[in-house]
Image 1 (cartoon, helix red, strand yellow):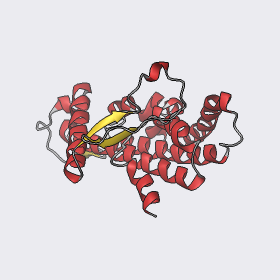
Image 2 (image 1 turned 120 degrees about the vertical axis):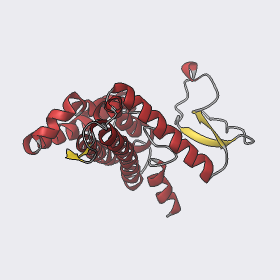
Image 3 (image 1 turned 90 degrees about the vertical axis):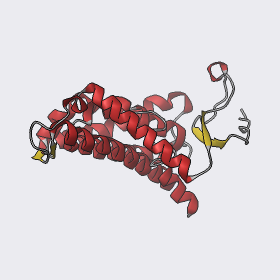
Image 4 (image 1 turned 90 degrees about the horizontal axis):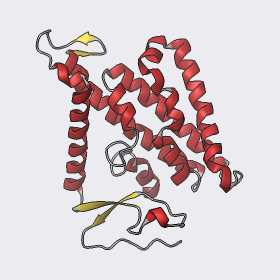
Length: 235
């Protein structure tokens, strides 16, 4: 049970796809201007992530290894198309605000990364929890940044006036403000993780030269104490 909970919570905290793994940053910076747009993007990506993880996990023993990436893209594209059709039919304003970033979920690094590194190697249940945790982690970040940017930059939340006109800080709702809020959110999460556990030093993958490495290892961020050496990666 603890292992299942760890898989789910990893995507929210220790391996947050946006603030720790630095994936999907383009959509976060572009869509986090309004809370409604950010929430819609988060829900759409979570749905695609969960569904694609489950289907890819079910097909992991059938898909040939040499064509796995094209197969993953086809699976993801199927669910993205469904989401796009539903949003365009029932939420045209949201579809307009998301723009090109909704169909670009097909090649989102978070979705393809979890398909390659997790869903293709784990059971359906674990893949479902991983996709849900990663999706929630993404949604929390993009909605949290959007709340601050819309409130301070425009003085509104869900287009409802909260701060009187003339007291907004316009730059927060612009591109520089997006980078500022992103940096603050990243620093806050790293501070929280540092206070919660041991002092850690993030490392990506193994310590070798991965560019010339032919090993099929699972590159991921691990939180290793400074006094604990990195484990050797077996080919």
